Image (cartoon, rainbow, N blue to C red; front, side):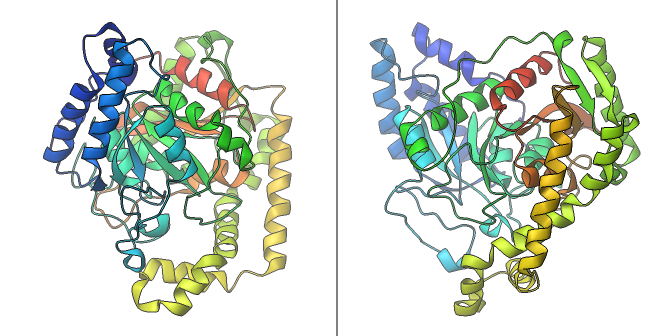
Length: 447
């Protein structure tokens, strides 16, 4: 396996651009060489010539002190459920083999306007809900990188790109970030436009990023969120300053021990408890919610979320997936067919009940705001499972997806030599605060 340790974060690379010690074009060539020699199968398409042209323009801007912002000169990957005009967008589906959108997704065009270098499409499971890819985990090729943003997690963790756009409907950003040892950030639902992103479940679909650091993740998200087109498409991302300096001692962290922690093997539970002790040693105030009235009310509510999320997903994917199944049954994978079949079994009454339960769970979360600043729990049910067919449990990631809350995975734990992420869940609309706290917690060295 190739070296999966990212030696330098993009923030450091950008300082070299500004000082004239390195150019975006030279850096891009280094990354292209890494991608070309990689055995991870993280990319399903590349656009190196177009990226080189963009890198040359970026190089000239830096030489004249006219860089566009923190994403200028940054090579990025784009998950292959997100439209790109210069590369095929196939959704890992035989139905869309060779499909070439005429325009970029809004998020891609925003990054290009900010000077980012789009180098390729990162592998995804079929429509981000179906069959796994052939992408392997950069830490051990015998293990899954997670899904559905498989290529994004592997590419970033291996240092092929500093960041890749990704999506999450249930666990597709946080899980691969956890398994591959990268930072994953899923914003508040509705904060970033999904124009040009293939839908799965409208009320749970999120655009986000997997990145080499919290700062890089924030720069990508902020570039998209502050683009004028984001607001014109109904998304809400307030113009926010740079991340705040947050002393760890000012953070009140609620420990969320839900019934799904039973999925974790003993080693992963021990790693989680060890991580909490390290944070406590740095001054973070840890609050065990299981002993509070609100915490005891949350446990049964959260126990139901994975199944509720599944039912909502099945109901909302009816369009366009039922038509795919009716018109092109021979070109749809069996997992997607299973979702289509399930979509016929969820009634409008079932759907309305799930939405009421979501509203109840959100009220419980709001009750915690007076007592905690962030919720802590594992980002996955342990480290990456062996094999590629199963991308792992999504139970612990569905909480934030179903509730639309901002969440991130930080590479702060290891089990048996493999990465294991710590999940932070924030309050709705408080993405900037969550990212600032995440950066503060990353100040400690991973184990």
